[in-house]
Figure: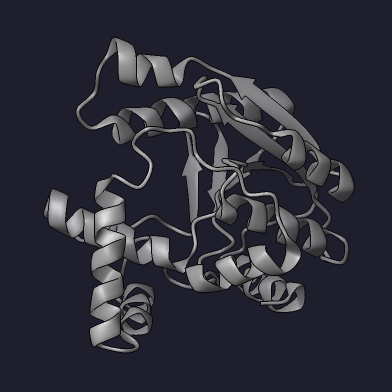
Length: 240
């Protein structure tokens, strides 16, 4: 997928759900994975001509595993003229050594988001952009059904009242397959996750399950996503 196609999908989501307004200071949580780097590259491109002017920051929460090389990401941010900040933490040690969590992802995500949100406030940001794509929307709903017994997925826009921050998800119309193609085309510097639980999670299991269902029933992901958009899920009604 070319940059023009990627920014077109992202702009459509932004405008459908009124994600960006004039003067916004938006931070992008950069994990080093393909999704967050795609969002960084595409939002930086969109920033140049979008009618509502906004500022971008890139922020990485270092979990403290000691083997995260961020040099190429720093170089990319310099190239894009985006401020880059790294938040040093001991989250990895807390989750895997101190707490020895049997379900590490839940606690890790909570601590990571807390560190990220605090960094955003210190930078003066009023919005955080997460790189959740269309496949994440679908898999989150399946995770909720299978493990929580409810129909739920995250919203395109979420206001965090306690932090006075707004979370936006501009990539909700982008397929994961297109993200992979985009990263390869533009040679984005993806950093392998140092987390020992990477690729061994319930989400990964659900992703594999959905891939199998989609292979056996071509187009089923399109229909599931359409059902989410039109099925009365909170926050998914088109903004007027």
